Length: 426
Image (cartoon, rainbow, N blue to C red; front, side, top):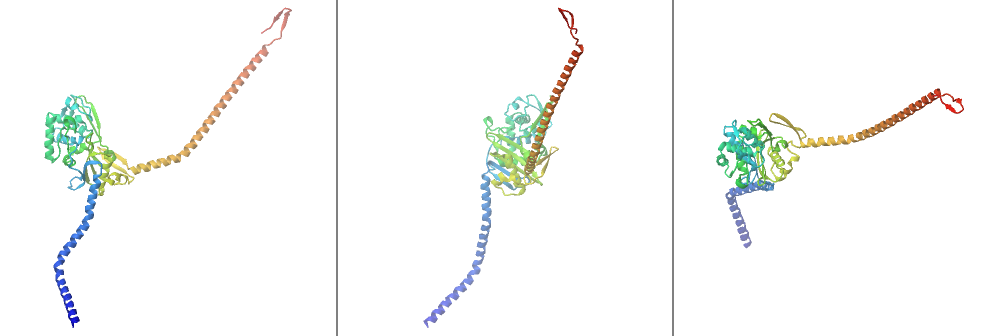
């Protein structure tokens, strides 16, 4: 009897527990679903967050103080590093100077070059005090050749003096949205009385996006050479660009280079491919800026995930610059220029090397043939000299015989006239 009572009580408690569990499941199911959903989201997002963190850490290793890569017309930044860090922009400052000159509406006016404009450090166009240069030609000199004398001549012409123009520059910068920039001169000097000329990658991107809206700026920014004449003496100035990216990357279309000892190597570049227009701002690059810029553009066009390894190695196989052995065609300033890819050049050089190696036996045979010909010529010369000697000997012998014959014909025997006189008739 006690065993039955115990069994009944255990069975009843188990049945009650199961009943309570069935009541509990519907109540806890929503919270379980939410928890499971959160778990799935965390599992899915964790690799993405780690990937983003890895990409950020990878880009931080690139030996460039700050940079930003962005497609024009898009709010998405493709690549960036310390874009709000104030640094010296060097001659990238001239983009603002030239933009203000273009917007002045006086591009066709003659500008008198003052002595103050010429008393600047290189790079300079070499203007002389008293010369007259059109304002548009000064803009070309400042943008293409980064001429400091041109930048100062623009400032003095537009505002009367450098200080007044600098004030106008800073006001224009604020209007554009350059919140972290401060300019002290129109050329980009950053030491001495011009110390404190600073900007950021983000501000310079805003400036460039503003500037490229002007078609005149675009036309000048992509020039490889600026040729113009002085208005009084008709002296011709021919100034070349410092932007080597125009020759190294087929899709590059400008815009400006910069360098000072403090700022390092700086670059604002633009590239267009398949209706994709990309801008790059690079400040204080402690590496080959042309190579890195080309790789960054390739990653932008290919949609490749940005990392430091790709930035430095992509040039060995990317978007047709190297991998495809074809000729890239580029039209600039009305002239058509062709660029062989590196692989094509390598294959061409290998073919030339092979052809040279194949030609070596032929060259050796030709050399032997030439040597044999020289030997034959030497033998012929010797034979000719021998014949000449023989001929000379024959001529001499003939002459001797003639002389002997003459002597024989003229000989007469002695005639003895008297005992003490000897007469020889000749």
